[in-house]
Image 1 (cartoon, rainbow over the protein chains, first blue to last red):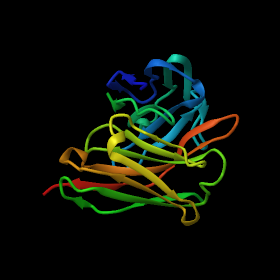
Image 2 (cartoon, each protein chain N blue to C red):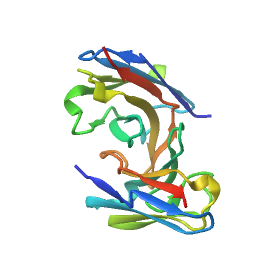
Image 3 (tube, rainbow over the protein chains, first blue to last red):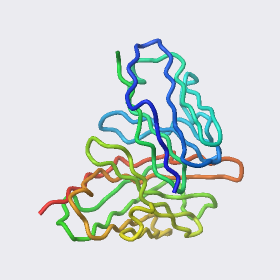
Image 4 (cartoon, one colour):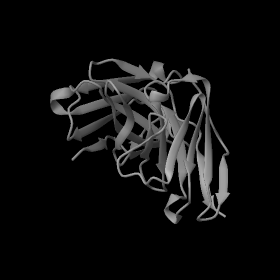
Length: 106
Length: 123
């Protein structure tokens, strides 16, 4: 079973700053199946990134994904107020989600 | 327009089985590459993937819960049913269903989600 570990657990930043979120897999993951989700309080998760680096429909280009093998990164280039939320990575199909990174306003 | 909606009991007694139904529209589970999955989230905690059923009736389960889970599909009725046996208070969570979709060139992950349904396990 692949285990995904996200870091940091909490990230405190200000609007306009750059956010870098990490997702590390316990064994190699095909980039084709690596996804990122955003979840705001009281809402269902929203797909941000699929295939490790492709933005889902309607996702702003300040969101980008990268990585391969066991190390993947979600980058938000300039934080907007609506970006403060919890972010999860998942290897679609056969494994659970990472434990999440909470992005909070500093 | 793609929609999914979860339905089932909001309160379950310990040791009972939970049966949840996901009713969807706007896509067909018979389409190659399509899947419907179940994910849960205990209050204040992280998402946990539970199960996934594919268009060809292939089924995948979370290893930690596999002995208690069953996922089935009624494709003509556009429904997917999840059963979780021997419920415990730690199974209290919001349960989501979501569409998953892969083509020969891309795998999109869970691109559409239901609103979720809160299930409480208590005597």
